[in-house]
Image 1 (cartoon, rainbow, N blue to C red):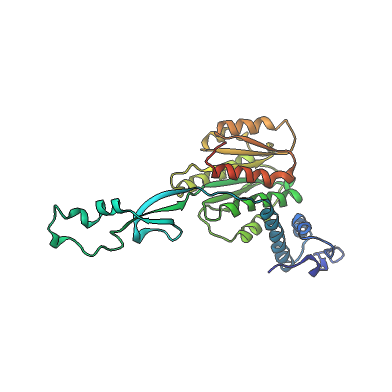
Image 2: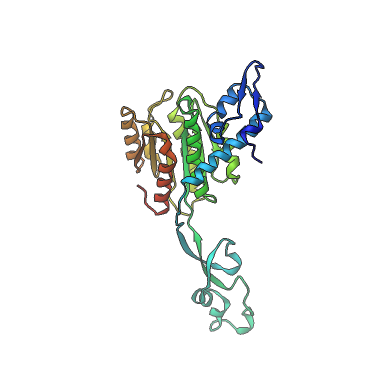
Length: 309
């Protein structure tokens, strides 16, 4: 259930002398000010409603960014009893059935010992399944990323979640410390995941090293679920860190690292380029943060096309 801003009228914070007027606020206004409401001590009931409204506004923005992406499929064979429910283009595989079923034993085994009729375990099928794309997102949520920046980052994450709804996606948020927002094997609704991201604390320091270490743990988790696909990691950072060590030494441990460098500051670009080079990936610059969701969408499309650049 979503609540229009005008339904709240005036919201009182913990200090009864301070009021927040939402009558003229748009859904997006609420999303960009969500952390303000938390900091000013809005009640849990009000925060719950504002969080749901913010997630709704973020998902609306994400849907506007999405275009048509052709999901790649690959062909597999299995007995009829083991064909997954999401399989497409199901077709009877006569050669595999003859080779692997009891029919293949007719010349070497007495017919009396051969099982007839054939069961679902004996009938082999070929079918197409969507190729999974294991992915880890590691996102800066320090104080420099609050307000509209945080809301736009949430839109970029929502774009990924909408395009990879059934894939092993892991999400890390880092500021003073790193925390897992979503494990690759978690199955939660996209609105709930967006709400969970919005509630990540925004602290003063940027511990990029911790964010990358946490992301590496999720990469290892995705490798166990990835059907042989190389896990990709997208790191959202401005290339600056105010806690921990220089994180460049970690980059070579990533199978594929895409760095989305946020902001126009050139001094921090060198670190981003170095991490992408060591991580067998590239840097995509996001000079204007409003373009972040579209740039994220472009990176997603390239992964679908099998391009690791």
